[in-house]
Length: 116
Ligand SMILES: [Zn+2]
Image (cartoon, rainbow, N blue to C red):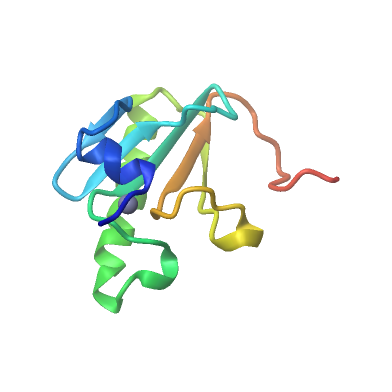
């Protein structure tokens, strides 16, 4: 039984703010936004992380990016946005369910990691 918070939201067991959903991909608002727009694009089926994708999951991975781009447009991010996947401990992954961060709504600058 998978118990991560995203699977619980997808199953309707706990509330989440859904921005987009189809049979394969769901987009949620991050509850601790780090930009004016901060969304989480993820597969509906449970996938732990990038290392758990099979070769045929390339289609799913491509769809995550395509949906992110479409939703970014719907959110009015006409000046651009950033996509990030945090993988593993050093990558800063907090929830063990593959998700792509979609950040935008302000100039994010060229740096991806803070200097500290
Ligand atoms: Zn899950």
